[in-house]
Amino acid sequence: MDHTSAQYIGAGLATMGMIGAGAGLGILFGNYLQAAIRNPSAAGQERVWLFLGMALTESMGIFALVVALLLRFV
Amino acid sequence: MAAIEPMKQFLIERVEWLPPIVVGGFDLSVTNSVLMMLIAAVVIVVSLGMSAKGAIVPGRMQAVGESLFDLIDGTLVTPIIGHNGKPYIPFVFTIFMLVLTMNLMGVVLAVGHVGGLDWTFTPTAQLAVTATLAVITFMSVLVIGFIKNGLGFFKLFVPPGVHWAMALFIGFFELISFLVRPLTLAMRLFGNMLGGHVVMNIFASFVVALGAVGLAGFGLNSLGLVGSGLSLAMVIALTGLELVVAGLQAFVFAALATVYLNEVVNLGHGH
Image 1 (cartoon, chains in turn yellow, purple):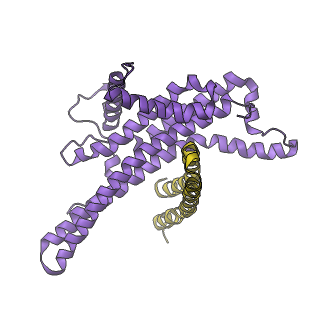
Image 2 (tube, chains in turn brown, blue):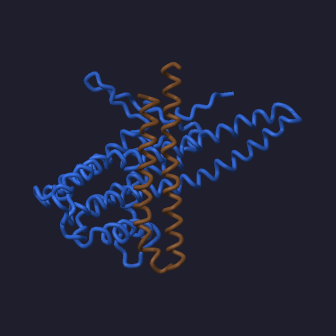
């Protein structure tokens, strides 16, 4: 296997880290909806924390993207 | 048939119809990225200038401006930082408006490529732009933290009431998570914008490629027209999604900047 194909395969494998971010986002929004349906009056004030949780969960997937981009382009 | 080049839209090029500027051997010409950022700045200044009338019964522009300001003041800064947060509203609001306008212009003006306006561009899909915004935020947090707390700033890394042996361990990880913040802040905006635009570009090129197959002949070829139509519907749906993402990512950037500021402004207050 030459260097370039190893790079491509590695970049592809690195994107698998996004699986975790996807599952995490699903759990996050699912739980938020559950809580919001149980107590709709409290849903509005927790929305900021929802987006913050989303941002922090997403950053794990972004690390995977960074590794993939590093493998591909650097 | 043109090859699919989804990354070509992110190339930084000199704007041809503007005069080249060369200072001391450096090419400082206006590029498409710079031009779009300048347009964003003008749009923000003009639209907010029109909305800042201070009328008791707001008109249309003033209602838009006030609801944008209330989004930052009413749902972010005041609930998160508290009453100490007033001085930081302009900073967060500026970052929010700039990112929001650049994101939205990237989606809306992307249509210009079809009409021959080849200088339309998404500045926030450039890591250099998002990294600059992230570093500005990070440095402000550092400077404000040291001004407000002095050397007590380092208490940020050690939770109160922790045994010293454990505090060394936790402090190490807290320090790493603090230092990685500008990276995630920059990469989040960059990754979202880049990914969304690449996907849109790929589906848009499916429309053309499959349409060409469909028009080439009869029989099985007409399946290409079906695929082309489905891709077109997908492009429309993705454009809607990108508009949502553009607003959401601007809000998330502002929200994270607020939370990072809150940690140093209210350090040790248990807020």
